[in-house]
Image (cartoon, rainbow, N blue to C red):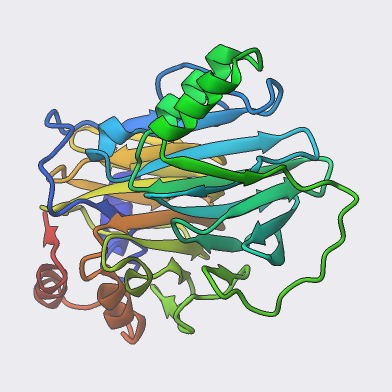
Length: 340
């Protein structure tokens, strides 16, 4: 009965979240979802930063054909990485909790819960955790060799030779420019960044917030225009229980990271219940949907490539009431999806 109510409400509540890969083949041909629970790693291998700060892989290059990887970071120390640049990857950090200082080139920005920063490839950057405890969700596009980098870093355990660390950096296309930030540093903050950008909590990158069911909101955090169409990342603020109708993305894989509330996901014939800190990957061509079980909920979700999904949310944002089944089917088809 929960599922029946869930699907019936779906035409008026369409908070989708997807991470499509239209120019690549299906990487998970069995059509099954991949779920990574809070505090766990995709393949069960821990790669903590400085031995004590969990830095868990949740989305693998093997999931996305090399197009995207994602990590969950739990900071117990007021520390951060060296001043470095990714020569072949863009990087995005979303602050789950705590306070962080980021350095991008010679500019600085302070971020707190709900803020996102986009760091373009080839631009030197670093960060330091200002609060005693903090959590980050971050993505790299394309995935590159970051999984191998963190595995090798953990294996060396701080005991590697300068040559081994240099080879590790070359393997991952990382160039170091200097030491990490220090806690006692208090640099002037920039009003805006010359390279990259910051999107604050409850704000949208494109200046408009999409209302999906009359009350729930989807904010664009990274737009298709920022990535040349390869990625679109949004944050969903669910104000009522329910979810979208069962549907298919023929050319897109999808990912969800739960920030607040409880959700039930259906992918093919399987169902999974997710709570705060849980992550799910949904392969393309698999019929899927989700149901927000709690009255309040919040998720990060993304599409790679971006496709027409921002246009889809813009279209449903202006609707009053639920569309007819025929109109809904046309709307989904127009934006690269198919209702089941």
